[in-house]
Image: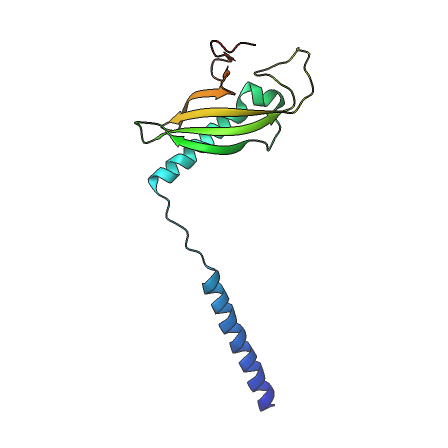
Length: 142
């Protein structure tokens, strides 16, 4: 009986030591967010929400296809960022294309969304389409 109790106690202690070693070895320190990373993250969410609600994406954007490819800081403002996203639509073109005859072609687009103080100040798709004005940029009409 004493041997059984000793074996059980040893096994329990070994399990406790192993679990403590595992728990302390697996803990990763979470970096403290800097104001810049918090602002950039918030700005990214604003930019992504803006893109997902623009008429081009609402009309036929493929859910889950928005992907951030690059971020650039604007000068001189510290809270100014330009986000480059890629996304896909099920038809070519821009804006709300309701009532048009459209080819059924998966089309990949690149959007450039600029935010300042977590507000969208500019949005362009494929260096052709002004998202805010809902028209082609000068000199890019089809």
